[in-house]
Amino acid sequence: MMNNQAIFPADRHALYEQHGYSAAIRSGDLLFVSGQVGSRADGSAEPDFTAQVRLAFDNLKATLSAAGCGLEDLVDVTTFHTDPEKQFASVMEVKSEVFPSAPYPNWTAVGVNWLAGFDFEIKVIARVPSKVQ
Image (tube, rainbow, N blue to C red):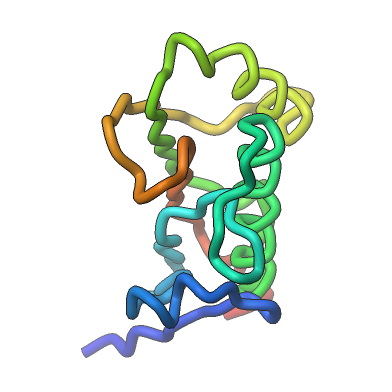
């Protein structure tokens, strides 16, 4: 039986404790990252949408780093948007900063009507590099 390992970034935000979940779970050479939002250290939402998206990516990068991974290790990306049509340009702006050139990760975007006070969430699956295993 494979042991699953909980992963948390060094500066874990309050949401993990408030809602009782792990930032990520490592299972073998796969890392399953919980939805990352643009939360400040106290768990509150960044009010500016574009800044919230950037902060969600920063939180994602911190979680990946805690497991020895980076954006280049992503296998699957899913994002959740409360108003996709209105938010598209801002998300694409940040996406082009985070992924400036090909190859780009596969990506599924889903419109939702509620994200617990947030407007953007990103969850991913990554492969842990063999040097970390």
